[in-house]
Each structure stands twice: as C-alpha cells, then as structure tokens.
Image (cartoon, rainbow, N blue to C red; front, side):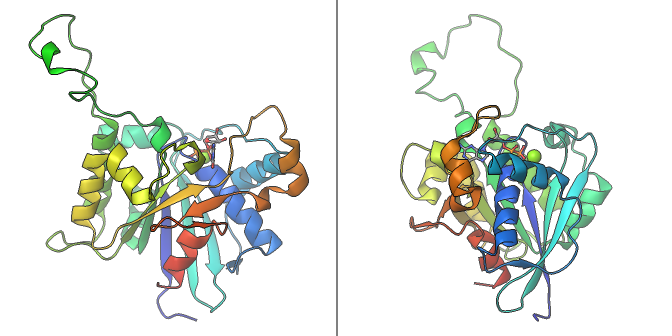
Length: 276
Ligand SMILES: Nc1nc2c(ncn2[C@@H]2O[C@H](COP(=O)(O)OP(=O)(O)O)[C@@H](O)[C@H]2O)c(=O)[nH]1
Ligand SMILES: [Mg+2]
C-alpha cells in the first residue's frame, strides 16, 4: 500500500455530467471492468445508483437538486494496492455559481479543498459561451451607442478562472512557483458533443483561450482529457434499446491528451492514483 493516500476532488459546475460520469465509473467498479476497486464503504451513493438504474434502461437521469453541500466519498484501490479517496462534492444546482458570485466557500467544502492532492475539473464546452469579440461584434459597431448595455456578467471563462482562483486561495499552495500539488486535470465532458476533432488541449485552447492560458501559466503540468461518459446523448423519457441491451458499461470513452481514444473512462483517475 502506498504511504501517502491521494484525495481526488471532482469538481464542476452543474449540468456538466458529474453524476453520469460517477454512475458510469461506479458501474465499472461493480462489474469489474476497471483496475480500480472499492475497498470500503462509500458514502452517499444514492444519486449515482439512481443514475445507474436509468442508464441500465438506456435513459439519462433527471437533475436532483440539493440545497446544501453534500458529498459522496469513495475509497478506491488500484491493481497495485495504491489507495485513494474520490470525493464527489455536490453543491446543489446553482450553488457553485453563487459561490463564485458571493465569494464564499462552505466550511465542509473548504476542508476538502485543503486536503485534496488532486483536482479534476469537468468543463462542458458545448454549454459555455464564447465571449463577445470582434467576430461576434464587428469593430464598426464599437462607437455606436444604441440600446442601453445589458447587465454585465463575468464571461464563462472569467467565471471558471475565478472558481480556480478561489479554490487556490483556500488551498495550502504557494503561487511563487508553478503548482504541482494539487495537480489539475481538466476533463472536457460530453466530448461527443464537440465537433472539431482536435486534441483536447487544442479544443480547450481554441474554445476558452483565456481560461486555457490561466491554467497553463499557474500549473506545472495541467492535463486536459476528453471524456464522453455516455458516448451519445440519451433521453430521460425514451429508452435507447441498444444501450439497455449492450449495457451502459460498454459505452463511454476518453480522449487522452495526445489524442488517442480509450474505453477506460477511469483512466484520468487511475493515472493519478498510480502516480504517472
Ligand atoms: N451527450 C452527452 N451527454 C451527457 C454525457 N454525460 C452527461 N450528459 C448529459 O448532461 C446532462 C447533465 O448531466 P449530469 O450528470 O446530471 O450533470 P451534473 O449536474 O454535473 O451532475 C444530462 O442531461 C446528461 O444526460 C455524455 O457523455 N454525453
Ligand atoms: Mg449531479
């Protein structure tokens, strides 16, 4: 057994696919399709089990909002005996957006951030907006004072930067040097929705250049991985018969940083536990 146990925090705004990714990972742990195993009692598996039941029927699960901070902790061990805990915090619906807006971090969550050795941030490119730039708002329009300006909100990229800044503020890290611990893995979730088939890092850079620059300048070795936990969109009402017949564990893939596809969706987690 490894001396220092890793604590891996899975983060992401709502609707990025955290629950479905968790359900697909859990299913693989249960049917033994992964080198990872659960070695103790996981807490709060309810939302993931519900999602697993829906997926077994070829359906996506509905959103289950929780009002308070809630989390599910999974003790896992890899084939070589390295142990880790996976922490799936659930801030409930809009909470993470409020957290950024209010600049406040729940105490329970702060403790998790303090102890985490690795952060996995899920980012769903498809639902994030590109900022207004000279392509969406040509220069000719610049001087025109027309309609009163809409309420200014930080862009999606700025909000993600703000989230990482806040977490870094809580985490015991020095910003004098590029950060090694906690490590940062960005999972570009719902990769099947991404049209341009470039490498994940390129996709992040071209969709969210400001965020990508921030991450590359602050972390020593940030890793960007594509993730399609479901492999295709599923409806909440109508069963995908093929899915139900073949089993949800046969669906899903990741795209490794250099661009190769892999059906082991636990790879982003196992590589952290194995220390590679
Ligand atoms: N196309 C596609 N949709 C996905 C995938 N994973 C999740 N979704 C959908 O994304 C939405 C949000 O997923 P959910 O796991 O509830 O997000 P959470 O709020 O971060 O827990 C749901 O409608 C899912 O059906 C995927 O890999 N591909
Ligand atoms: Mg969820």
